[in-house]
Amino acid sequence: MNRLTTSWGAFDLARFPEDPRDTLRAWDAADEYLLRHLHGIDGAPPVDLSGAVVVVGDRWGALATALAAHRPAGSEHPVVQITDSYLGQEATRTNLTRAGVTADRARLLSARDTPPGRVDVLLVRVPKSLALLEDQLHRLAPAVHENTVVVGTGMVSEIHTSTLKLFESVIGPTRTSLAAKKARLIFCSPDMGLTRVPSPWPLTYALPADVGTLAGRTVTNHAGIFCAERLDIGTRFFLRSLPRRRGHDQVVDLGCGNGVIGTAAAVANPEAEVTFVDESFSAVASARATFGDNAPAGATARFVVGDGMSALPDGSADLVLNNPPFHSHRATTDTTARRMFADARRVLRPGGELWVIGNRHLGYHVRLRRLFGNCEVVASDPKFVVLRAVRG
Image 1 (cartoon, rainbow, N blue to C red):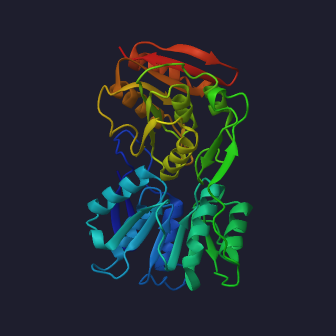
Image 2: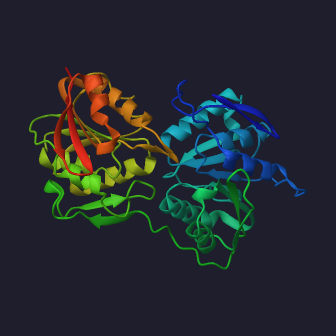
């Protein structure tokens, strides 16, 4: 946990789930820059925050916590946070409670919820995914009026010409600030003459012919999920290497993305019940659509937005399929993978199997062998390896 000091007070903030070994903070220079701007810097007046304030893409709740704490109790307009991350939303919830912010001063929405009908101040933490930014701006554009203050923030490395063009095409004329601590602000003036069009998301595409049981099938992708516009090569390799099983298996697609892995397992074994798990609201919505369009008649599934498999009971699964991420926003880390592997060991029954795909250089086999006492290579190519570990 670290302390963020702002003009409105100091806040002890942490990511979720809290890990005392985690050295990454719950905010960065881009969040600090935006908060300073809102309070008024370099002689500029502070931004009027008395109206409907919406914060999009607030990663761990630093912005929502500081702004909601500044809000008077009983305010007509609670600060609205919109995020696609369950972990980010839970971090925000915890940080708000720690700051003593009452529930009437903040409202937490997911990226799949209906956005507010009016926005007076729109604050956008630029996401890694340009597609997610596109979807969010399109969904919020109808709520923007000519006097809406629109400010984006991000690290210099996150803001590109394409980012600015997107703000300009959806909201209106756009300019940027000078950089400060490698962060930059985006100022956008609403152009009410722009034609408002619906978001182009979700997208669908047909799978290639070399992916086994789902060859030629259509998958659905909401904005922001990994490789939303095409099948990534790792998943493609995994689809060709999945186990062939029969019977009433309890299967978990852990970190399901668009659900193509779990759906392939359901098509190959219609007797299985598949649980799709992801921390992204959009990913689980994609998985639900992909499964619904492709699963055989009578196939059953559950869809869980959450912190890994924390909601699943011990010894309840026969097979866990996992393509773990190795990035957390801009940071490269194996923290998520380590937690996923430990979760899998807990949730698997004795004799249950964890199948993992990863880049060769990540060395997942070392972690799995230490955790499970065994690990074998099922398939490999020059870039990827599919590993199998069995719960003893």
